Length: 208
Image (cartoon, rainbow, N blue to C red):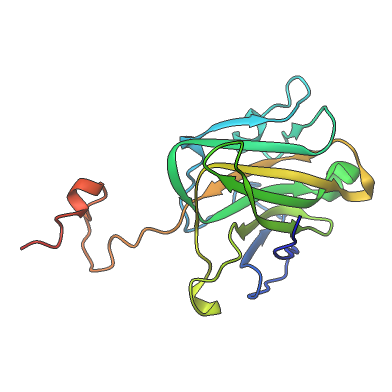
């Protein structure tokens, strides 16, 4: 498995990925950070490789960092997100806590994407050192142009996050939250407060 980049909390490496980190135990509301990218995870069907009763895939989406998915099977553990149509996926935001979960905390995540479960390809490998809080990084390692232009989105029907390894060689894993983020739609670049959003209308929005 090729390593396409290394993601570390509180470090931004423009050569590998942009990263946004919010501590889980920071003062104030313990919630997902405000990000410009839209959350598209609600469009998909979520499943996990295994789970303990009461700690299933629903804990990844409930918005509560006190709950978590707890795997209960052989490694590697994985989360599969299946969309009904091909979507553009820009970033992943994952909530982890080494201080709370110790050896249950993922240390290496592999991100795969494809048109179905049988043709998934590695698009990024993220290495995390004692993560704490919400960590957001680009799914792709392919630049749009220059480094300041950012990274290209990944177009896929299926996205899979694989827990390749845990800290301290732990077996089972805890993930306290997960969000799938689409790219920012620049529909109102011309100042239009009510831009067209459907494909049919956007085809003719330039005709006068």
